[in-house]
Image (tube, rainbow, N blue to C red; front, side):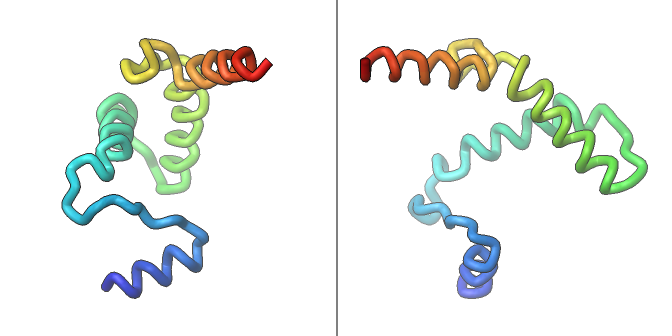
Length: 95
């Protein structure tokens, strides 16, 4: 099983997680993100096809979740706004 998974990751050029097996923190951020997407978007809609679901979910993530939705971990800013402010702060420190 693990060898199959490792081969699949290599084939798709995906880096495997380096956390300890069984660590509750290893996938916490990803799990919280997917839970939010399901609760706030997916479970509130009906999609006719998988293609429609993929397109609409991806659009929601890029247009709303990353640009306008405020996140507690980002000091109640959107991820895009947070990244921009962090980049400006780092550039100011480097100057």
